[in-house]
Length: 453
Image (cartoon, rainbow, N blue to C red; front, side):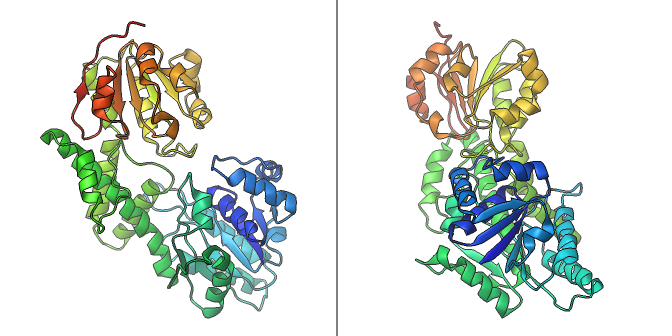
């Protein structure tokens, strides 16, 4: 099948590459010629395991190509996927300017009927607006055919997006006619050979499903973070509680880990957009407001613990951060808890030494002045960054941070203090290594004595 994907961002690149993997001929359309040139050479602007090799393979085979020309890119396509960004607007709603601009362009260049598919995360009613905009422009051009717009939201996790697309746990199809449904079912059939996981519903229901899914996962995280705060005051270990409730199949084990807050391009944006949707309908989203407020507070907890430990004095202190991206497996820094902590520590006069396997370049661009002055140091080596530190803060639970040589870490640090922002370490084991340990919603363990190094 000949397909077009409009937008060469995170969702667009994964979608285009994975459809090409199944033998489709895919053209990915990106308005930035410089980006098109880089992508055509196999240079991808994001870090996503498995994506680069897949993209290069299908560039070489001719199954995948890139262009900045909309008319060229959609010519002859059976389906066109819209995968452009929907950032948060000033009022918290999803900014649909990019989606509607694509609709305008399609209406001006389509020469034959095809299916338009919203892959972007968009508010309820967006498909109707896109369909109306395109058909209006087609009518003005004297075109006799009309198009339909379906909703096919993505459920990709950064760090495992290729796997999620190739082996989806469900495919949501929001279609208003049988022909659209049948085309999308044929397209997704190779991904669903072992299990039928297509969930067909109305277009509006599909649009809402994506927001509801992300909002619910964000709610689970914020609930556990709130319970962790209470556990800290009651002398209860939140990890014991997590295991206790996670064994209940009605609750499950996913997204019930307490930590220093969620970030990324989806949860914060989608919770805000859903809140704004509710406001526009005159409906009070009390739970969603609480989720957002709890997450904002959660991102400040590590700073509060550090401030308490240092009696409010950060001048002359060296703080090491392990992990900068909002989650492991990605270089994405959007809404990352690390940035909240970094901003506050640097403003308070602390020296920061930070380590991340892939996100250092993004942080370097954001903090160029602090890097130049020496107040901030960045490196991919966790050991290089703990030397002379007064405190080590685990912010992002990359695998390489899970079982470090703590004896070596202790020798390198000036003060062996560990703040575990993701609760990945055993407090008693860390205390036995000579550290003072503080987690999220966990009893403090160990003591701190200056290193002999």
